[in-house]
Image (cartoon, rainbow, N blue to C red; front, top):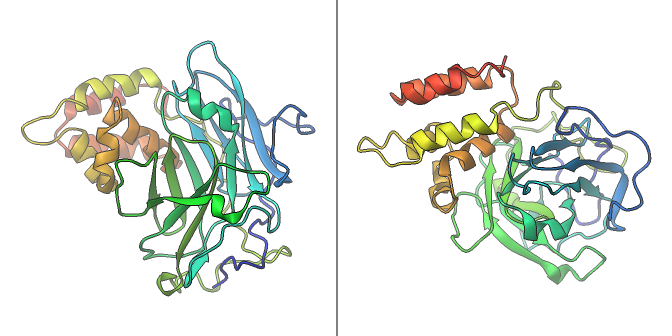
Length: 313
């Protein structure tokens, strides 16, 4: 299995432009006012203007993406939001003994937007660690112009909750989902002893000396569930119930119950869960599956609200 060693490039050819809030790309040269750091790979950056409606920004031919939920940016405000992969060995974190870098270094920006976010965003990054990863560490860097490696800090560990952290991480067999209140540079590392052999032979190596990270799924709307429907579901599922068939059981059935504390700190736990669900589930049958999940919780009221929404296929 190939992992990103300290002397190799973390970035494969992951494409350049995004699927924005309307599913279209913004072709042409990178705007001079975009504010990309010098370490960004100019061929691996996507951007779009984002407002209250939110957007999903993806680097084509990869699974690297940034989901800005509806309502994360206040009404009347718009920003050029971008996601990029770092070029070569620039801005690489120092690793502890026995650790390996399992993702490219990805930056989401602009960094100043952190102060204006009303909801966490979701950063989706493919990894090459395979199945069974434990204690994956999320490293974050807020200084992007060639600062010392000491500027990197660990902000989250998979399977562990830190109520003081602004970031949580969900790791499956091929993807890492960062739910974060900060726009910054991120990289994920794991113990070499935990790296799975499951992906051996299935990872292709690019001329840059690293793995090609995933592929872009078929084009689909950035959000399956309108904000108004999420708000209706929140009114039903946020209040605790005697049978616990509220947002807590929804988190359990969707496999994210390890992050209960994080969800509980959000203004609407249900909406926070659904925002993560949106980033994780891009297949055409996802909403139908969610309806069945709600029915399985005996929450037919919530299932009916979702089932009556005609905006999903």
